[in-house]
Length: 289
Image (spheres, rainbow, N blue to C red):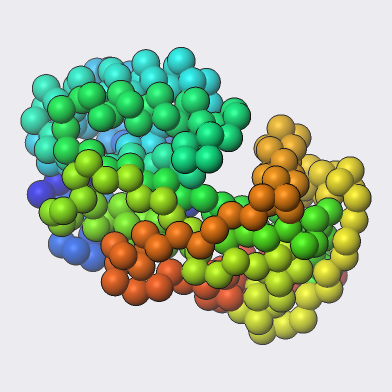
């Protein structure tokens, strides 16, 4: 079985590649820049983009399953790209497709719901055996939100200390996607994924501290200071606003722990403490501080 992974260098795709290789499957990765991909030995890296039909058609040749990541934020463009892709996939005889969507579909969050659901509907109409993987908050977002201040100051700053969240480890997302690609019983299913614990922002900082094995200071700041800290850390302003909007929403309407990770994988999801331990090198103290 050959599986094509789009977005193979991303947070989820990179872990998925490892899981598929570990399961003894042939993996092909579609990437714009093969030289910079740094994927493991054994991965067939193909140069191309989802916007280039000829390259996509070549990448799909002989493929049995696909992990699909749109990467487009405009609803109309995302749906058109998905439609072109699934038509080529059907022509190539692809059997199943697993797409990375999001929980915004189920909560109908403006700005995300439309694009994600449009892509899902295109995939559902493709005739392929499909599975939607819908994670909520990525634990890996903490690297962008708090990584710079943790490395430089051992400090976490938040404008919404009591806002609850259920961040999910990217490895759990990847393993659910792998299960849907490698085993039967997942066709026509949509999996809503969360972490196993509902924690306030303050509790999340404490969990990360335990995972790293060192104390972190928690500081409550204004919305503006939180946004400025995210941007200073390298986050685009619109992404900073988007993430802060989620935190404000969670302060009023807390998300729930979802059972799908445990139901699919047969074990509880990884905790945020475990996530921090897995990313200790990414959050190591700056030796210059």
